[in-house]
Each structure stands twice: as C-alpha cells, then as structure tokens.
Image (cartoon, rainbow, N blue to C red):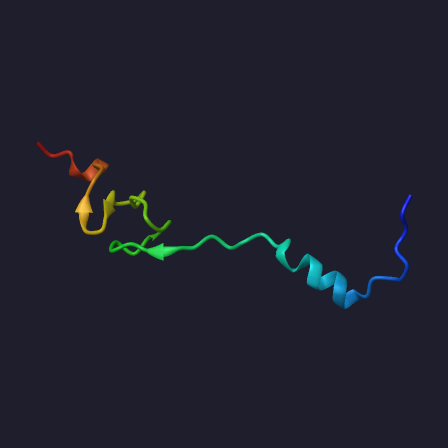
Length: 62
C-alpha cells in the first residue's frame, strides 16, 4: 500500500479542503418583502417578475 513521503501541512490540507464547504443559498427579496429563491415564483404572494402566477387565499373573491 502506498504511503505519503512527507506530512501534509495544515496549509496544504486547508487548500485542498477549501471547496468542501456547503454553499449558501442565493436569496432575493420579492416585491412583497419576503425572501425567495431566484428565478422562481414567490411562495407567499405568487408573483414572478411583476406578474401574478398563483392565487393566494386573499385573491379568491368572486
């Protein structure tokens, strides 16, 4: 079995592991002020890029 010839320093180990982190999700804020994922319909008001796509409980008045 192969063994390393020299000890890996903390710096080299950290550089290798620099991409192992969990990425933070990108969050934008809708016109209603609620946080939402980009390029998706807002879960609270149902709008995307200024257009209404889903109905909420307050919209059903007819």
